[in-house]
Each structure stands twice: as C-alpha cells, then as structure tokens.
Image 1 (cartoon, one colour):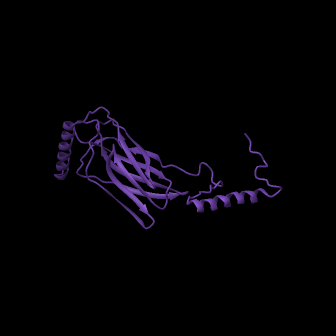
Image 2 (image 1 turned 45 degrees about the vertical axis):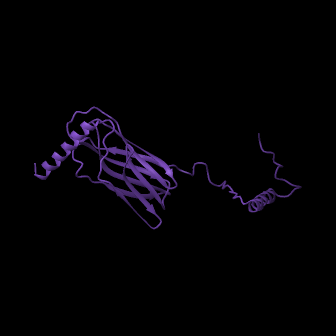
Image 3 (image 1 turned 120 degrees about the vertical axis):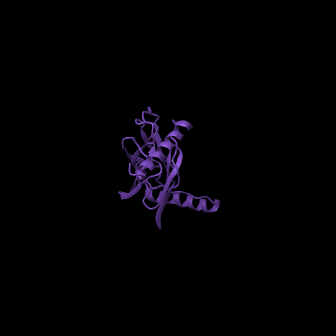
Length: 203
C-alpha cells in the first residue's frame, strides 16, 4: 500500500519539520525510559554490508611427505574496504584424489573461522600423503579481525589484526583425515618419520 503523502504534513508545515518533531519526541522518550533509540542511516544501500567469503582455493597434487617438516606463509592486502587474507600451508589427506574445500563463518564480532575440509578419496599410496594449499578469504574488516583456521574442526592456527598491530600462532600437531582409521593413520605417521630420516641421510 503506498504511503499517504500527507502523513507528515501538518497544516502546511514542511515534512522535514514534522519528521524532526517525531525524532525529537523519540529521543526524549528514550531518555525518560532509559532505552536506546537507533536512528537508521537510509543513505547506506542494502548491499553495503559484506559478509566474509572464500575467494579462491588452490591445492597441489597429493604427494608423499612428512609431518615433521612443515612450512606455511601468510599474506594480507587491503583494497576497497576489504581485507584479503591468503594462507599457505600443508595438510595430510587420506588419498591421492582427496579434495580440499574451504568455508568461512563469522563466529563473533570481528571473529571468523576458516575451516578446511578433506574428502575421503581412494587411497593408493602407502605413505604420509599431504597437499599444499593456498586459500584466500575476503574479510569486511580492515582495522581488526581474528581468524581461526581449522582442519575438519581441528584448530590449526590463528591470525589476528588489531588497531595496534597483529600476529598469530600455529601448532605443529596434524589432524588425522576423518576418513582414516587409527591403524591407517599410525602407518602413515610411521612412513612420515621414515621419509624424514631418509631425507636427513641424503637418500
């Protein structure tokens, strides 16, 4: 139903004056009753509030490696009021054709969880299989944020930025692929240690 054009008219007074009277009355009422009144900013469009999202997921081919030697990197850039956070690292997979997907969720004010998930695949190698990944996530925060990185729910690392600086931490522990049982995981870790010894011996 269209809004009647005379709803804010009062005896020929300008509409802005009537609107100011209404807003003023609300503010006075809020002071008396102890309530906070939020005045909406109608100048902002509906699409101005962006949500965090994963912009790209890149992975290498699965290969035999070791959990005893891990490396990773992080890069940040800001453009158009959005922070682009790129994380590079490795994670164990159950099979050579296991796929890695990534999702990001807001879990609190300026707090996000980036979760990497691994598909089961069909195991064809008897070693510690791993994939290198590079994931970029767009965050609608440029001054402060905290991102928790999980591998199938296992907390792997955290990175943060505040108005005074930034930092983060990571753990050397690796998460067993959810599709592998304990005995298969134990064999993979044994193969991982053998791989590291062979590399140390120059083999």
